[in-house]
Structures are given as C-alpha cells and as structure tokens.
Image 1 (spheres, rainbow, N blue to C red):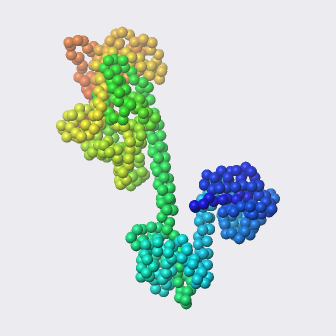
Image 2 (spheres, helix red, strand yellow; image 1 turned 60 degrees about the horizontal axis):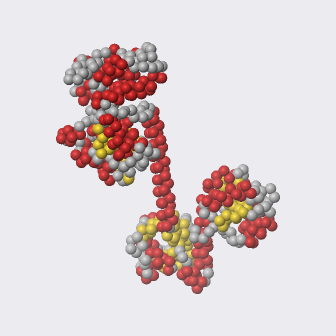
Image 3 (cartoon, rainbow, N blue to C red; image 1 turned 180 degrees about the vertical axis):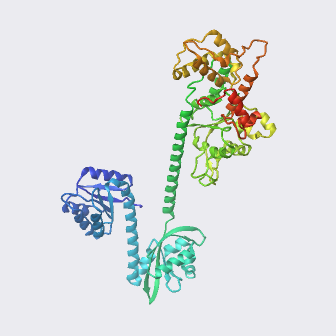
Length: 602
C-alpha cells in the first residue's frame, strides 16, 4: 500500500480502543478512535473523515454492531468492516458475516488483526479490479477503449475458440515487452512459463469453473520469468465469445514474502542454535565442575600465563602442547575467559573420544536423512561456537580424511553439514591441544603438514608437574579443599615427610594423577593430618644424580592409566587404549582388574 491506511475504531471502551490503537500502529496503519456509541456519533465520524477500513466492537450496550454495519454500508463504499469480540458465539459470528461483515477476529487473538485487514484490503482491490473489468465489458466501445488503455494492470483479451490473443492494453505491452502487432501472433500459453497449466486454467474458465487463476509464472519476450496473479472472465463482443485476463505482476510481493520467509528461517535457525548451545553449556557445567582457577606460581608456569595474556586478546589460533594431565583444557578456558569472546560459548570437542564415523557430524552437523539414524537436523559444534571459541582436544587423533575439512574452516571460515549443500559461514576462534608429537605424525603421513602450520600459529607448552614441583604444595591444598568436604574430611596439616614424598615423585600422570592421589589419601586419612595410603608407599623419592626406580606393577599401572586417560577410558576399538598398548581388549581388562584400576566415579 503506497498511501497510509486509515482505520475507524468503533468502540465505547477507552481501554479496548487503546489496545487496538497500539496493535494497528505497530502494523503501519493510521488508526483513529472517537467514542462511537450511537448512530449519531457514527454518522459524524463517517461524515468528517475518509476511512479505508472499520473495526467494530461486537458488544456495546447502547449501539449494536448491526446498526454500525448498516451505517457503514450506507456510505456506498465497498470497504472492509471487521468485527472484534471476546465472547460472541459461532452462530452470531456467521450471521454478521452473512449481513455483510468481512471478517471476525477474537480479542484474545489480536495478532490476527493486522493480517486480516491486509487480506481484506487486497480482496477489496481485487473486487474493484473485477468490477472495473465488468464495467469495461458493459459500457460502450468508446468508453471501454478509454478505460482499457488507461488500466494500470495488464489486460489480455483472448478468442475463446482459437485461444489467440486478440487485443492487449499498453500495460500488457510494457509488462511483456511485445508490441501490439507481435501479440496478435501469439496464443495465451506463449506468454506463460508453464504452458500446460495455462491451457488447463483457460479450459476451466471456458467451462465457467473459475474466475481467478492462482499463482502462475509468465515470461517476457526476453525470457525473464516472473510470478503473476490473474483475474479472468468471459464476455460476448461482436457475436464472439472472449476471455479477458487481468494480469498483475506480483514479483515485488513475492520478493517481500520470500524475504520474510528467509528472515523467519534465519530466526528459527538462530533459535535452534541458541537452544543447542544452551543444552551444551548445561552439559559442560555438569561435566566440568572442577578447576575454578589456575593454581601455579612456578617460573615455568608463570611463563605460560604470560603467553596466555598475550594471545587471549587476539583471534589467533593457539596450539597447546603437553603431556596428559597437565591441564591443557584449563589453559584453553583461561584463554577464552580473557578474550573478547568470553560472553559467548567455549565449545569442547575431544577428537580421540568420538568414533571416526561420528566425529564429522559432531564437528560440522548433519541434515535430516543424510545417513542412517539422522532423524533430524543436527547443528555441529563449529556452528554452536560461532562468535565464540572451539577447543579441539587431542587434535592429533583427528582422522586424516577430516583434516582437510577442518583446514577449510580455519582458512575460509566456511563449512557444510553432512548431507547438506549450503555453505555456512562461521567466525570461530580455534584452540587445539595434543599430547602427541605432531612432527612425527606428519613424517608418518597421519597428520597434514598444512593443517599443522595453520594450527601452530601460537604454540603454548604446558609444563609437566615434575618440572614445576614448587607448585605441588598449592595444588595439594587446593585438592584437599575441593574433595575434603564431600568426603567429610577436615585436614588441617600436611606433614613434611608427606609433602617431600609428593614432591619427590616423578608424576607421569601430572596434575590429574596428583588429584587422584590426594582424593585417595583423604579417604585413608583418619585425623586432621593427610596420610598417604598403601597405594603410594612404594613411590621412591627422587634424589639428585639417581634415577627413579619403580616396580613393574607401578610401570604397568602408569602406562595403562596414561593410555586410558588419553582415550577418555575407551578400552577397545581403533585408537582405543588396548590398541595403543598393543594388547587385546580382554587382556587389558584382566590387567586392569588385577591392578585395581577403575575409572573415578564407577
């Protein structure tokens, strides 16, 4: 609509009228309310203003909606009259529609009001168009010619018998790009991009079955395709039966509809992503309750913290290197929390914990039906992390066939879901971590060299615990405070010999092993002093110039624990702990049972 649409509100309630005014103003209308509660006030409102549509309350104590409708109809204008009510019955509503009301909207569903008005205004315009065409047909040829030429919609007249185009107006010539002479050599379906459908509709018009052709695509002389709406009818002219087609180009309307649909689809996609992100964050909160802060004052660890401060404020890719249990994920969280992306999600993916056939879907998502079991669209972790950070743990275990796809995301910021064809743009900060020597993996052909250099923009090495033993006292205190309350233990002191034993141990499992040792020691401790249990009695204090000696059982236990931690306690399968150790899964399970190796919490 190019001009403002003026709406008359017939209502005796100021509160109800204000609700309608706000709803209509948001819809782009110019609503006006004066207290219309009797016939005289209605006449004054109609006399003093030019209205496009009227909205009437159905329950006014001194003025009936039927009386309002009658006065509205007496103006002689065929304009929409819409009834609003909260309690009217179906029979009364039907009676009002039969009396001439154009639509009925309940007060509890005011969201339907603006679409109802727009629909009725469009139908009013269509009725005007049909009446105008009828006027063309019944008036004299001279008057018909004037109107026919001046009509802004394209008019095409067909011979009912031959279906030839007999005549067109200027609007049709301008729309299709043909001259009047060129039109005379065409049939109705020659200007259609869907000729078979056009023939079928013309047959229905001939039989009197329809007067309006729904959305159908036409084509111009230059083969440009555009959507149309067509009102149709038949008439007699010079003893010949004719069809008249009033054709409207609805390209702009379809573009607006498509734009609205795309916006709604985008909003739906954003809603799904936010819902998925919310679920993921809840899972992360549940699964990662530990390490509320970084513990460490050693020189080697302070160097790491300085590097984190330097790189956190950038969007550069970070590669964290270090042995299992050195807190690589904790460092990744610190980088994210110090970055401008801290208010968005930090999404974690353990590349070693997921089966090879599922990790692509987990990273990039999949479309419904893309593989067996894909019963719905899944948004991948990269999409969840859009605007935030993704932490790719154990990146050295990423299957070779997926490394090229990851490289594309790093270089181009683009991905495609499994089974999808649309390219999705993402802006994600990538932090990767590994306990493997990626240079050796490149030499063996299991890790792409170009991916390594793309990841290794800013490397950070997380030092093993044996190289920062001055941090052990602070870590011991932290783990005592963390696990003591839930184990109902109140430890006040750590004896010097216990601390020396802990500082003298080699710690192949690093901080994670220290946490396990402290938790088990808390269970063994009976008083307010920390006591190391039997599990730690054979640990040898390391002295300068001497090599640490461990029992065979200790070495087996440590190797098995390291392999299990590296694979997130996955025993069997490719790249499982048994595969890494070169054992059969049943053999590994037997040794775990013998050495009393159990996953914490089981």
